[in-house]
Amino acid sequence: METKLNQKRESLFIFAFSLILLAYPFTSYSLPEGEKVMAGSASFDRSQANTLNINTPSDKLIVNYNSFSIAQSETVRFYQPSSSAIALNRVVGVNPSTILGRLTANGRIFLVNPNGILFGQTARVDVAGLVVSTLDISNDDFLAGRYNFNLKPGFAPSYVVNRGSIKVDDNGFVVLASPLVSNQGEIIAHGADVVIAGTSSFSMSFDEQGLINFVIPKMDRKSGTVTIPKEEAFSLVEEVVNTEGIVEAAEIVEEDGVVKLTGTTGIAVNSGLIDVSSSGDGKAGKVFIDSCQDTVLTKDAFIKADGGLEFSGGNIRIFSAGDTSIFGNVRISAKGGRINGKGGNLD
Image (cartoon, rainbow, N blue to C red):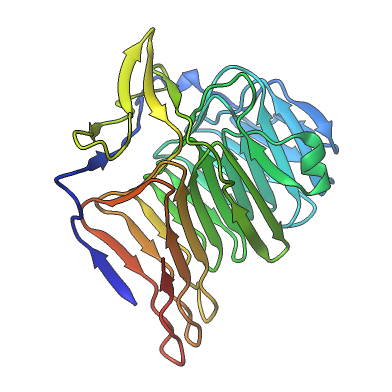
């Protein structure tokens, strides 16, 4: 099954969400600093220039940092005991995370920063599995395998934006979740699962084979304000036309050196590539894009979930508790394999 969705309700809604990274100075970003191991054990090796090697024998590792950013010339490498091992990296400082360089791991990486997370155009991520969120998870829940994420008390809603390249292993997963979340780059997850979720709360479960379940709980659609420091990025929202109220009560204001998007409960935007197709003669993965307020697919978005030779196409679900809007030429492909493969499902 291959579908091309042309302009839909264009007269009502044009939402071209763009966060453009400051071209310079890159020196304002540096390798992660101020680490404190909260559970498990790890060593932090900075002997190589522009490189942080993190070695851990722990299946579950929790590290709190004062800051977690990677400049374009820098690399952070995790060495974990297996592909199913998880390292939870939590920022407890006041700055957003800006990832411009390389982040690699042979296991699964969780990155949590309530101040915001940006993967710039030069970011290259290659891990077994990835969760990126401005929503926090308690240490007890993480260690017990209860993956419940919520907006941290006392923190305003924030943003997760990918403009770089994210790649995970077959049977892995990618979860980008925040009150304001946007994929503008590429996510390559052959046979794996990808979730883009605009929300202030979610829970998930998974095993060694990948993601089992992802749930956004029912909640009151109470609005909040997403705040983005201007020194981290400019032109946060390049163009929002809201004359018909499709994004209800959303408004952009500049105040006290920051950009604020008010009236936000949960917005998910995809304008990039998400590819969960089979990497060979295997199964396709799944794509789940959901939000508490509005889900938007913009021009040039491409979602691909083609099956292998004898396998059906994957499942693609695009949903919102509010409105789902399509702008421009959006391509969606979930073709089955040439031998006995059936087309996938689009909801």
